[in-house]
Length: 303
Image (cartoon, rainbow, N blue to C red; front, side, top):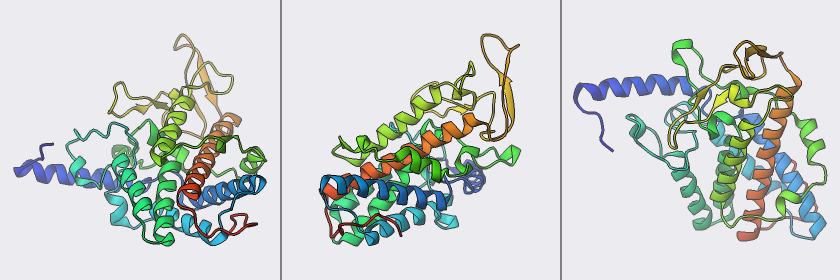
């Protein structure tokens, strides 16, 4: 890919830094604590299912190592977040004029982490890589990261997608998870397939209806017009969880209204958070079967 040169190089660098500075606030889907809790919930569910099948469970120490690595990536330092690309693109096209400034692109970095798990010389190294894999899996359950929609709008002083800061619905998640182990019945042979499935599920969710309204969640996030490009924010704007009204139906005359903390918001967020837990549990099970370890029976994955 050609790089900017001469005076344009400085302009491109400056623009990229401004954009990246704006993106550091929302450089990862979900807040660090949410990443941690999603990981603990996934481990708890996985161990419950493994125990029912008589398989060896993940130990609390293993779960803690995975969660710490996950949180470490989500809550990494300023400069690490400044140049980390957090948007899923299966094509990984780098025709962006500032792409060369950023760390290895999303899918390529994910593949490197897969290799790190396989090449790890110790369980600690493997668990650290798995924690980072888990972080990426959770990221693509956020619509803005999976479609993708570029979040920063520096001209509006808006640097984060409001879905990413929506509260984690822990009690509701535990109730929905229950004793359901169906998502663990068939596990792909590689983590990249789990990533692609999770991202695809997010895209399908965005195309789904907003409760009983005659509109889909594309009112908030629109899919790219062509592969490898960014989507955008729809007529409802970056207002997930807040009061908003927007034209819907067959004409612009009719308007849809969502109130602050509308039940439709909660239902959508719960489904996405549930997808994050299940994708995490699937990755943990793949690791458990492929790499193994010294897990202890009876551990529930809690810290």
